Image (cartoon, rainbow, N blue to C red; front, top):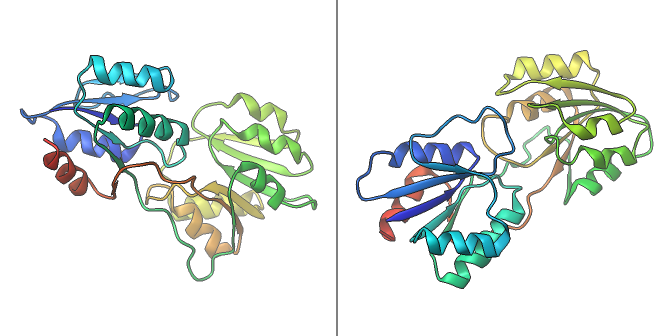
Length: 245
């Protein structure tokens, strides 16, 4: 069985480790290629885009792919849409493997918004100290609210951070513990945290720290899920693969 895993997440990496060495599978893990320092998985892999829907269809045909698992980031909406169209057109089985979203708990002060522009508006007109943990690609949206002070944490230096007149950039790779997150929020006098509802335990400590300190959270909710069955564990993904083998 020739299997394409659209990856870039811990879920995709965990699945790759689980199926590594299976003689009945010929898997390939695809990375978007936006993050430097890629750790090679234990299965064959590729890096880079496909060239839209048409490019992905060409790849699926030329590589004789039998099934696709979309294990991209929950906010990689464009790639998920392309996978749904390409697999639908070619009648290639497709499943979505993603972590469950976070849910507000007692003591949380969440403001749920549908997108980045709404997150900017949710900060309001009063000057606030804002902790941004949204990655680097969409930082430019916050240039529309230059009166806030932004503490920006990313893995790699983002180009758009220069558009924020008042900011501090922190380059760091998680996961971070609750004590670390709470200490940072206290030291920076954070009033509001802006983050995406990515789900998962690896980055959940910032939410626990915000809850403990009474910090408001502007939560950017996920786009609509892609097509195909929803898988929420490696076991479920392996069972789906075996079903289509």
